[in-house]
Image (cartoon, rainbow, N blue to C red; front, side, top):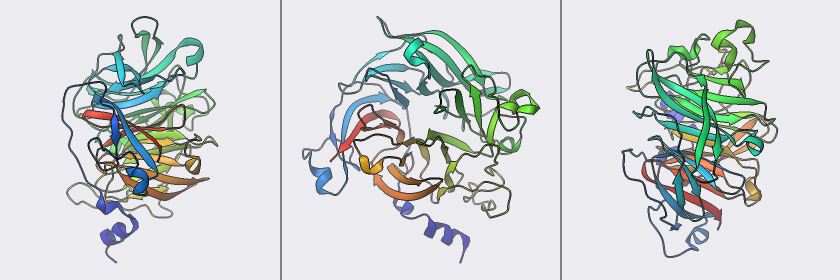
Length: 395
């Protein structure tokens, strides 16, 4: 059987997905209304989702200008980043937002800008948060991660912002920064995803942090026990290598770390991280180079860790969340991928260290971020100008 046909048969249901572009536009707050997956506006029938068999109701709460990430605060409010460099303090139910001052200067170009935001494990005592963004320096641009204290008494602001990690080396181009963040389940380490910057070979170079997942102490130093700690330098930061553009990272209830990453032309992946393992890029991939150049598929014994799940055609995973709530009890422990070109929300049934493809719901928009809310609702950020904040509750 031809290789491309075999790939198409394995990628169940992926052929129906659609792509979309991304441009700049204005920001606005509000915009509440009930929406159905696959629609782009309000609908008058709030029971439509249940009638169609879709297990959730989607309600738009706000719109933003190229939102990229969000995280919830203990009081139920949320922080939302916009790629253009703005950090917003948001009341997600009312859709009202206020800018947070003191954010870093960012380079906005291509895929670059302000990126992820998460709470520090110490947030309850010191208001700590972590941010990622793209900066300019010797050799070009690269991702950076900073730590600051969030203050919400009076004007929302960041205090004491300091850079604790920088992508190495800086290089030309404006793609594949990665820079998703995850605090380890025990609250002792910080994981940072780092894309290959569209340079291919550095993903296999232990002397660079490009194409890697890094494991750091909370202050940005290499964490003790990393696989290559004895080599020192940036090599000591590496947890796994051989990644292309990891744009989603999450921990399951047992503490395992999972990553969703964009492949080339096809070959998007979900990977279970095993410390010290090499995930193959660019020497192995179940996709092909843009323009048709072949890449060896993952095969047993090739020395690379194969993906737990992959898609061809591409769905462009932009985020990953593992659900731990009770509002959707049937999905507890499952992973959710927000698809960009796929314009879908995709459920993955995680069974220990294995992954099984679940439902794929068309959402009619590029999904940049998937997040679990305090009450167990699932929240989505749509990509691009006018990207909506959408709340999913049981139908």
